[in-house]
Length: 413
Image (cartoon, rainbow, N blue to C red):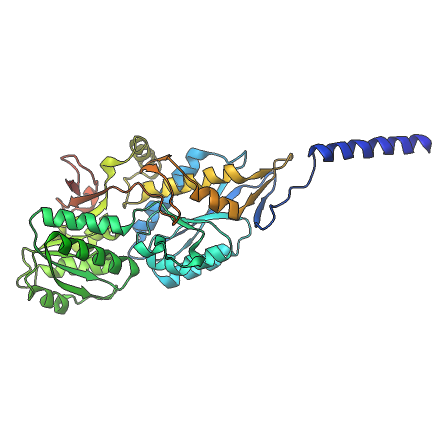
């Protein structure tokens, strides 16, 4: 009996000593935070909310692939595999709300990369932030998403995409510098398109140009001739419609059939910078010009990324934001490594509010798209915008760049 008591006493002393040193002590979530618990053999789970169906599917597929390559390059986080799960956010407020509701119910989810479209973001962000889920977008560009006066329930949101205050101004500078003086704009009612055409119009007029018409269409409209006839009556020499594939293709095809618009310069933005838009527009796409990220100004690692992409998927990149998605994933994963609390058994506690702060604290991150530093409103991009021109209507020739065999080919700056 005495021997058993002595053994028990020694065991209690050993356990007490281990607890005092932290060995075997239970991990505790920091006061006021909410933590994701990752078991010793569980993966770190990261989500995406992208448009992976419908007319704009290449936009989402392109960014999803950027995330997948980033995860492969990273390998593990603190000894844990990385699991990627996702939902289709479409390119609408309804899609964003549905995707965010589904993803935010997952208590193992560390953070989300998304959405693709600003209209989806507006509905999704409050849901993610309400669930304390850090969210970083590779392709939302609407200015109000990171405006200093943005809603308080956007506190968990950042983006690696450029702000359209930059893109709209860049396209206006190109157009005016190229000699165009009378511009018309068309938006489709989306947050993205309306804000972008507003920025373009303001800068174009500031430079000395005239904005002779500002029209709107529905994203599913097919008969564009009444609207185009009204535009033609104002004699523009440049039309900027930063919209999406379905309506954008119809405008491009029908514009050449409207008297007065046979030779007007047609242009759009990164929302239709894809081979799918070329398919939708047909032969009328030749000569079309886009504003979009300047791939020639990306970091040294971008060429390696392109090689990995083609080897993995058997084709070239599909749309403009694959590298931004890669950078977004890397920012989340680097922040997890900074804030995760590690247990002796390999388990992790990941405090989500601290994770958001670590993402906002990102400074001089060497990304594919440049040197990224996040400001207090969530803008992390190192924005560089170029203008491209379509030189071949064959969608299979899609290969944007600055070389002689590129299509679309960079023409500015």
